[in-house]
Image (cartoon, rainbow, N blue to C red; front, side, top):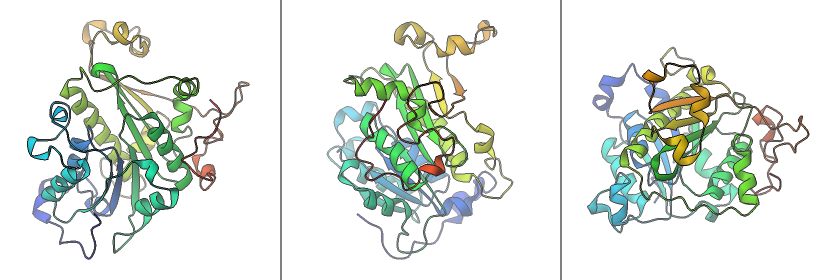
Length: 326
């Protein structure tokens, strides 16, 4: 369903207590395109509470009873398209919000259709900034998000919860700011799928608070990306530049993460630290470099490893075709 016509008046009283927290004028003209809205439902609702004025929701699924324990849905949502359930709550938070519900998979949309969803005005002005988000656990959809963000020159954010919610990760890109694309950061994962890896990780065994924890840091990061270059002096202005090339975030949500999942990142990062003051619930921001091929390996097939993601704008014939290479 597409919203048409003039948007309702912005409800000033709704945002009276957060006038100094965000650039509300910019947020009103910001657009967030979410591919996958299940576990991200609370993330989207909270961004509506930050004043973001436009949302595109892409998800083919309907709400099932088993989603109640792992996602921000309710019994009244069972059987409804997930995009409709989330859109209804976004409008309840802010009646002036413009929402487009796309109840299909990402692969049902060609590049031209995605470009329109990201760029075209909803009957009025074009968005001042669009953030493209991959919020699904489908690797191939996440891989296409990377290609689309490069092709369209958009900032992007992708996130996943690890097995049983023992940890989570976020990768993000911003053309002209982050030198490495998602594929550079996750090269070993791309290679594993190229070699035939089949993912068997589901939301089974994941506490709801693992999803909530991930959604919270995603929200701060989304605000940093949406405020980048806004020219104001607010708390989120310049934050993305301070984050810089640290575009792999990893979150430890279990003190036994390294033993259970054999992920040793936090052991390495905190070596030499006061271990008596550390246990879990830490986020590390890991610096990334582009895969340029300078070490004899193949350059990143998506961004070519040039270090400037703007060089990739308009270079994909069809982002539904994952480029060959690791």
